[in-house]
Image (cartoon, rainbow, N blue to C red):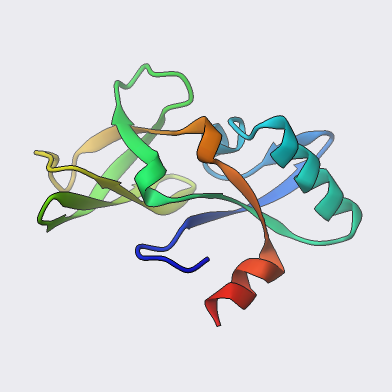
Length: 130
């Protein structure tokens, strides 16, 4: 998917009616129509990702539902926004927020906006990058 910064894409699979993807908390937020799309893609033998744009992630309290604990690897101030390059045990991803006092090395809690978590066909995401 075109855009800057690019969408965070997490390899996923459907197993026994559950979508598995690191970080699992983001996959658990997929709405029913996106779960149906994952089932359709799997039925056609196609791979897929769970995707969420960096601006649809936000910092949260550590005990927030579906929060992912992530270490801040790099802070990139960009004027009115800040890009946080994050790492959790299962994935690396990017979050775009407003100005923030977060520093590299800190552990933060991250949540995704549930209405913006998507299933992305793997071959489509590769094609769109060409």
